Image 1 (cartoon, rainbow, N blue to C red):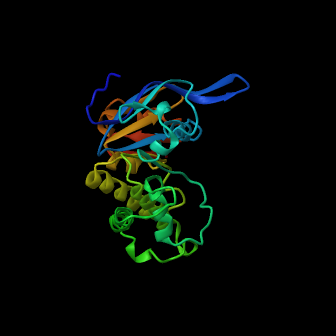
Image 2 (image 1 turned 90 degrees about the vertical axis):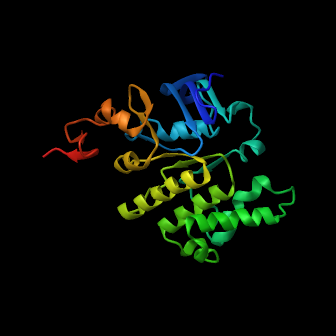
Image 3 (image 1 turned 30 degrees about the horizontal axis):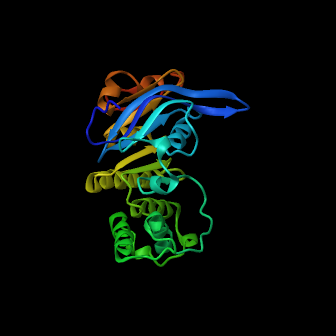
Length: 264
């Protein structure tokens, strides 16, 4: 493994992603290469259907890659047992919770399952991680509320806190700002930025909020139909990477304002 950074948490080499069915492979994206360091906030952006969720599921070991190699903490992802992987990688998907009758504290405590013994006994350290996660996300006042009582924004914070309580070096989130208004979209992404800085965890998420991601992220993965690019937002802007994301008949990327604008 040729790691460019000693503190690399996730490294992808010549990755090809897609689906296999009846011995036939359908490739979604190929030649994906990047390395994520500890303490970084990284967004995956691109048009609908370009493969953002497929890439996240592949990186989380939910579905197999077609080719290439993924390293998590300098160890091949494919070699991880599920129990060990859960102590290194936490995942927040857009799925509905199995029950919303649990309290906020109970949902967050589920994040400690990979660390508890076979009968699930909590230690003082487990309780500390749950408490710290609630404090960091600023939801301690909600801990006794049932999840069905929460707004979408509050529920998203709870799920992030659950991933934080899991205490992994890498946190992966699939579209964490879906169904939120612009204020709460920015609020959630600011929380993710603060977590990466204060805990030194690597946070990778997919999003359609490209303008916000440009402002807040350390690095970005830009996916289009022809290539997958990886760099700082500044370098990606300089290369014109965002201008290629969508047909320019309706919107264009303005380099000066670093935002997308509707053609008049």
